[in-house]
Length: 522
Ligand SMILES: *Cc1c(COP(=O)(O)O)cnc(C)c1O
Image (cartoon, protein in one colour):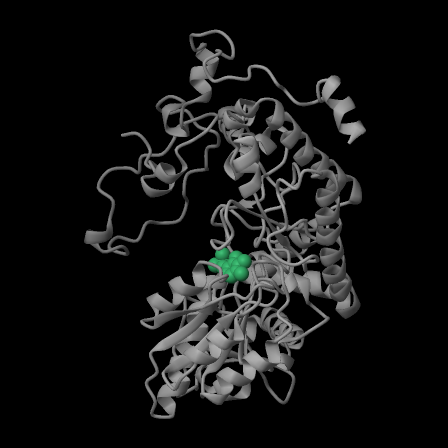
């Protein structure tokens, strides 16, 4: 604590405290031409005819009528006309206005923002991977099919379930597939079940998926320890239940010790068990959902298996299933023939069909396979253990520094790979909300943790440090958190008006999400 006070006296080196209030102008009041230029889109830059690169004239004869009349463009496409330096500067500048994992600590809970090794980029960029055409015939894509086959096998080992489909493009897409498989399974037995049970700690995509697939969401309560309320589950489990969707450890970062009993209750009423594997980073190589009795698991390759993520970039949410659900998997599936060659098998009469075009996001598979190969089974286990250790270390540091207990742990004493604090006492005693704390963290150079999720914790702060952060980073982050609390005790308006050092200040976040303006100016 004395260290923190000392830092404060010295004015927190590296942190800009001026200007503190929004009504204090940050600099000259009029915009300079350069500032105006920085605020323009690429379409507003350049001049007609200006080019970054000029392609040689085409020397291939034009075949008339190759493109049907109705598909032909009448006027040239409107594209930016800029020089190469304008182009480079524009995008480099835009990229610097964002916060990214390569710039700093990103403890966004439930997202597993771990470091993405550069080796994987090298491997994914090899021409044999990067230039592979999605229409390539299987006999000309043997290496890619082998990689997919091996990845399926490795993922199946991690989950403890034998049949894997790589098709889904995201965790939520995997969830959708899992629910569709569940329906196909029940229908094949002449049953039509309408309910899917999900705990109230579930990630928002779980109830959204269930609703989208046409099932009814039935919420199961959470007990005092942060696990499933088994009595509530028993009361709600009946022969209308198609499936239970659960993540373990859940989004409170708590591993449910009653998992075998939970599995039995659902199996006894004939339902399937779906394991949301987005939180696999805590248990890879240690415990396997298949061994706990689960029938379906999805993985987030863009979380646990190091595909860079965020900003809507490509991801992958493969799923693994038990024998009873295998006949319904999407087609085609990768098959290894007896002679060691690979093929795509379309002959699956009970398949739910295709989930997307082609075989999935192949570049993601390459990165995740590289990760699994470079770590090995022991390495994956080590990654999980370190993720859990790091989360508990950060938790312990925060508990130690938060002497007034303003952001207590919401449930339990220890955690798995992530933990949830409640900012409710902070709000009551210091007058700053979780949102204010999160915004102030930006001035300290950190991406804030997840806020206001899970919904059942008042003023929630969900943190996941991951295994790839050092002790120094975790210590510095904990000290920043403590410094913000001390600062707020002095003057809450500082956090209330944060951030001060970012390219933009407080935004209308709901408005930005609900009414985004993403069109180029006409
Ligand atoms: C991230 C996450 C999902 C959804 O995954 P997407 O790839 O974002 O669709 C589902 N459940 C949990 C617990 C998650 O953390």
